[in-house]
Length: 447
Image (cartoon, rainbow, N blue to C red):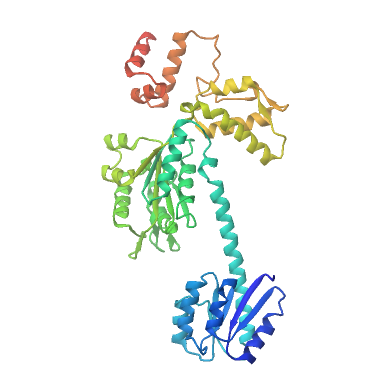
């Protein structure tokens, strides 16, 4: 079987054979000819790549046959070949899905040759894109990309499954390094928008004076330095997904503009008047509690309710200890494979050391720790001395002999109060104790 199928629908047998002979000069082309539309339609089960269509077949009008071909053989490109140079007819046929419109003359066979080369190049590119999208989808298979067996992670799997079945806005909450963007991508690449763009933007990384232009785009001359028109992230997302990371960092003025965009489902570029309709899915993320930000007057309540949608909270790594070693082993395998080195394993003491650590940087920190440990380990076994925690963390390098229990309590409480900006409620929640217990311990420690 040859690689590329071309069907020629032409009732002029002599002209049909000329086209066939010319195209078969390429040994990769398998060419078949048909003198009626009925015979052509009966052979569509063979899945041709290209169909050249005489506009005036004895049993079918070209427009009618084109409509049926686009319905019954949507993957085949149709090239119209006509004896009439009718511009209005050509425009209508191109609007209805014809790839090209060629007028019969001495150069037709050469122009058809070039057209088919372009079609084949485009189809190869489309196949490559489909393959890449499938690879991306596999990469973001949430049960593979989001590692863990803890109850918290299983709950996230359940929520992702619900999210991909609808177009509901999703709000993701989680500390830095917990994998918020991984969850956002898992939702996108398993939804019916998976073949459309996924556009991510970190709100906290963009200066306030540029955020509007980044999100909504700008026209040439809209401000100093705007030398050409630029699409914004919403426009780039099209009918795909836009991921707004660290949404809580957006200033109040921009919150008002974002609220209007979400309500009206349209944007206007900075310095422009054209209204651009939106149909993208919204996924937002933050390491803060948006409800608390609303109470503090930092975040608009109406925007909060507009963005809340389906909330997904990613637990910190310290709250899912049963996943630490599973993740560590995964990172070892991944790093060793990527680096082309023999796989290494953690010693029992290394396991114990990892389990004793609070991981303020969460999964991102664990990955960095593991990759460094693999590099530092001289043997196949990773020992505790190869595992280095951040020296800025007061809990990182404690040994059991150096402090009393009361002193440990003080260090731990100070650590979590600092971590949660002296929010006793959050610190108590992280430590799984009551607020009164923290106050009592602090009093006893005479802090």
